[in-house]
Amino acid sequence: MNFESPQFVRISKASDLFLGFSKGRFYRNAFPFTINLLLHFSDGCKANCLYCGQARDIAISAMCKTLIRVDWPLRPLEEVVEKISHVVSSGVSLRPYRVCISDIEHPKAVSTVKEIVRILWSRLGIPISALISPTQFSKRDMEELRNSGVERIGIALDCAAKELFDMLRGSGAKSPHKWERYIEGMKDAVEVMGYGKVGVHLIVGLGESEEDAVKLIQMAHDMGVETHLFSFYPEHGTILEGWVRPPISQYRRIQLARYLINNNLSRCEWMKFDSMKRIVDFGVSRQELEDVIESGLPFVTAGCPGCNRPYANERPSEFPRNFPYIPRGREIEVIKKQLFIYLPVKNDINSLREYLNRVNRNEVRKSFIP
Image (cartoon, rainbow, N blue to C red):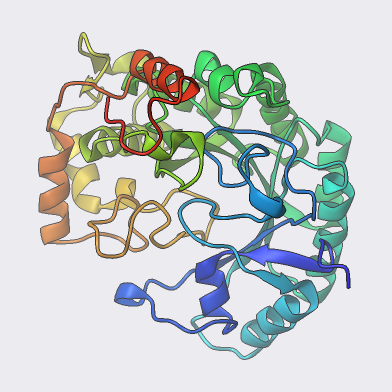
């Protein structure tokens, strides 16, 4: 039997639980409102991103170990569609609002994503997002996706700076991705889908400075692209499994800056950074900043409408980095304290180079803290 896509797809653990394939409970009833699907091929992904559980050099038997912290079980697409259709048509308020199909780097990926999109749109009629790689999807391919029912396109740039991208996703990782094509692909996607209909993934904690991240967010916003934030979480078995997670204070400041930029309340050039390139002034008045923080909205998961990715960046027992609901009360007080803690920067690009050099010399694998 052929267990590859499009007949089979991987499905995020949260989506798997929500649809009833497996059993479990959601902490604080933080149910997912987007069903996340991922392509699967027997010979795996052809890229080699150093932080990814699907990287070519570490994936065993082409099995996806983890992706953004969790397992992705393999399920028949027909059963997935049937379960989504049943929940959507049941009329219950707790139901998925969209489906997101993510590609992997593979010769069959483009045609397979298109086929799955056609199936989803004809059977479900709910919004569809496609997370695609500009390495293999051309502008014309994006147009075909739009015409087949895709409402939004996502592009996982992940790295905030070209040098980091080259080290972790490009030539330095013996991987096919190129920074220039990703930036071009973001522009292509906006031309095809329109302003506000394209998202770019940014993983905080890969070696960038806060200023690097804010510049990338501003560049994307000026292009008409929204930034969807992730906090780096080390995937077991990857090259970066021993790399340190970003301090929560660093992540909170970038969350706040992203919200201000994406809502046209501030700009990168209005903000101020210290000698370690940390944000010390967000470019708005104290009262406006206080009001935005009190709303809790900057700290909610940033993604397509309806995407809350519950606990993708941390374990449910941890204080959330991306809240799958709007934080209130005591949670806001904790966030305020986190925002203005300024720790020495230990996860910068030079520390990352040192870490990768030690990995190459087989001196470190799991315990490096820069």
